[in-house]
Image (cartoon, rainbow, N blue to C red; front, side):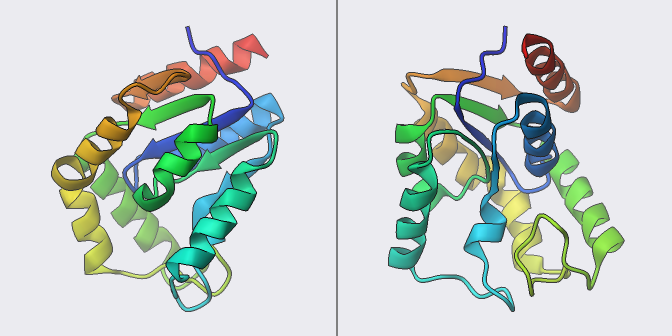
Amino acid sequence: MVAIGERVLVLGCAGAGKTVFARRLAQSTGLPLVTLDQEYWQPGWVEPDKPHWVAKVETLIAAPRWIMDGTYLGTLPLRLARADTVIFLDLPRWVCLWRAITRILRNFGRTRDDMAPGCPERFDWKFLTYIWSFPSTHRPRVVEALHGFPGALTVCRNSRDAGSCLAACERKR
């Protein structure tokens, strides 16, 4: 059984399908979608300073209802404290890497609609390395942060799980 509340975090490695999942969930539930990549990045792939980013996240999570797509470990504790539902797309590294590479090739040089303006798709070794190292470096931090989460937690380990989760959410509405 998949329980969906009013403030939903969709977490996972880059390439796991967070944005596609969150978009479909927003369409089926009517909850407003917040894509953290759009909020975080500034034109030219410039990162905001930490105090500005934290303030922005605090403003975003203050809204009464949302689906928030993005892992962003630095602000995960803030977002978890406000969320009532977490969906963790815990897919295999090779799936995430394959999806990211195909997305790069498909959109190279263009800014995707789920990305901040002025941030065209590019080939970035640092990004691909992040995906490769996610299971050993970042995933344990996500799992630790989720330990004891009092809300509804769903972990999808493959695309079939994610599809079943979405189908269950759509049936409930």
